[in-house]
Image 1 (tube, one colour):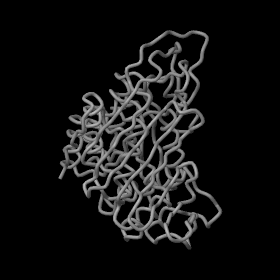
Image 2 (cartoon, rainbow, N blue to C red):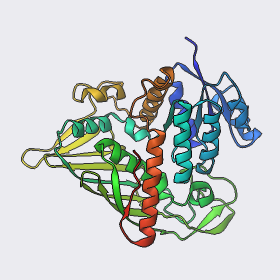
Image 3 (cartoon, helix red, strand yellow):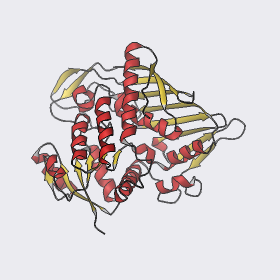
Image 4 (spheres, rainbow, N blue to C red):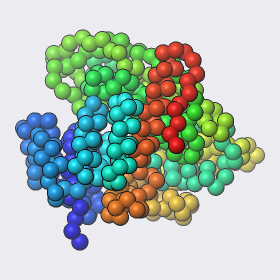
Length: 384
């Protein structure tokens, strides 16, 4: 069988994670990598054992042998690169956010529909087995009618004023940071697991470190920004946000996102409270799901093929006790995306977030920004 040939645009933290996950599939060949200058591209290709390097991604789009593109570039490049990928007829897996604005997201959503290519956004937290089990519990009515959805996504990698990264700058990361960068994962997960859309929001956001010290030179995500040479920069994107939400079925919710909460590295948590029971999942202990009851002992369900709903089984690969974590969620993402590529879109899993999902999330973020600015509840524009 001929291997699917793919190219990676951007070989930073997330690009390297894509590469490692793709290689675990066995039937996809990484044919090329692109970076923003020739030296960086050559260094990345050599370090990652990729045969071709370029600083001009358009060369890769013009190559008929390359079938799939992974867009792992910084946020501000997503729209134009994604647009060009679709116009050149390549299947596309984009990092989130899909774009920096909802207008740009709408354009890509409509273009993807027109071109009928396999497209997806890497909201990889959908890909955990226990998330799939919780989704199945909601679908089967095990929790009863959903009443409250609670969650947070907490990190501390920007705790100090000497912590700096391109995501802080609106020109590169967008007009929101904590909301768009990590909040988008949380909001997507809440809607995906419950099957409910967010209809209204009331948001409060804050810049808790108003001045940061930017190092001379680039800093990769999650690495310390401390160097000998620093320059002060005024911060205009939020470190924190809490938001009340209302779902389409009348359920209420509350979410908190922060990149300045000491001791929390990648603490994504989702709690779904129903009329019969509750379900709680934490990414940093992703192998288990807590199920709570009022009139019987609560349960901790472990990641074990013999215990999970059948819909969750394609998302786990080892027996119970052989734990699978964040890297496996990336592998699952690639497996389900490339299953769609191999079937020309006929068998793509709903665990792969669509461009429609990405557009809807941008509309949610728009509403949160309006709410934080006005101090009022704001409705979320809904796609049909």
